Length: 161
Image (tube, rainbow, N blue to C red; front, top):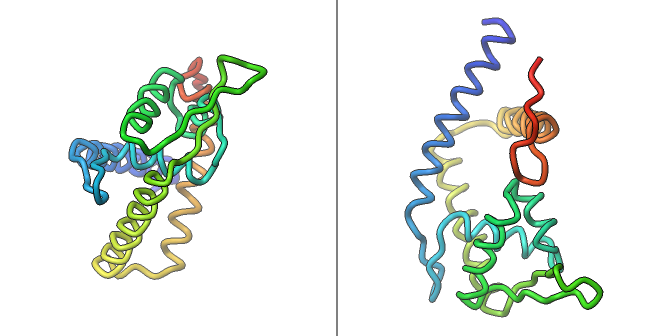
């Protein structure tokens, strides 16, 4: 296969993976006393990894619009997992951090992800070098499409060849 055919095949497989992930996201997962959908769990993870992040920065990080991010953060605040604090100088800007319950739920999410990765590794039997190569290629695709198609989590003006 040519490079162009390989890229087309990879893009098709990424769309297939997207549909599989979408199916997973429709089912909440219990993390002790709290049930979260995948988007909520990964938003919580992004906040945990970037304590004090603003909602706008979170939008950019998560490739979401500000409105979609606000809805996700509202859900996490309602569940007692995230604190939203206004910045004194800018009443429109909020900084985000985890509550104690949020930290506990985040830790459970990380443990579940690690157990899942262990199970997948056992099932697939792929070598570390092959996985590293795949991850490197995927990171390049993510960077390319982010640079060329996204602006603040939303689709920007399409830049076609």
